[in-house]
Length: 318
Image (tube, helix red, strand yellow):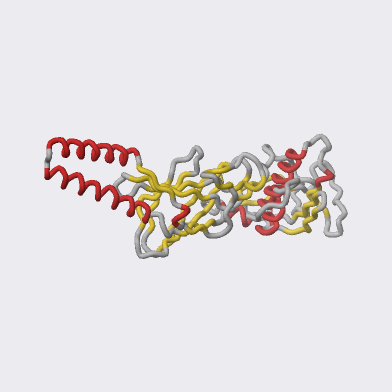
């Protein structure tokens, strides 16, 4: 795509607003104001009104001085891309951006517009300060979600001039696959040597979380789930035969052959989330990639990122 004759390519790093990156045109109010001045000038010439000349020239001076102040409201700012936390596909992600004002001049009424179905945000930036702004990104599919083309506009101070710039930052957020809903039961666990444990019907697979009851083993408490609970109530991991649960192997090749690629990714995603809730270690085996047995935020993030980027060309990391 092109705008103003320039190729739309993502901009890496900081984006300083120099003179060549700022565009200025009269606003609708400015055009009305200029038209009124022209009418006043014609009437003043026809009737020879001396005070009319003074009024027209004063208002004309205000019109042109406001042009300089409107341009200066954006000039010199530095736009800096940030990061956004990954979300599951279908959820709304937040991309963090920052506006840096290195000058001693405060900036007012700057609007940030993404051009999507979201309202423009208006921010003020203090002198020699940095203002953080979050942009909502709706994710409809898994994978890397690039930031949209951003437009910064301002009509400060009098609304007579519209000043704007366009910024396409090389930033974005990662969308993990949407988990299967409802989730399928976790596969059978395996021992550290890699041999699957043999169970009768149900086995000792993780089943669900339930409220803590006196006498429950402390090893079965779901500490992470308790931390996320609004009231911090203790919860116990329940297994289908009352066991403690073992290590889990999530193998792409062991999934039912009738599942397509996206359904497989959704099932693996739901298994990872279930295992993390139950605080069970797990391994993930994909074509050409293998994650050893572990659990925790790093394991979860690495596995879900691999699922999000499955089958895609290399892209920037979140």
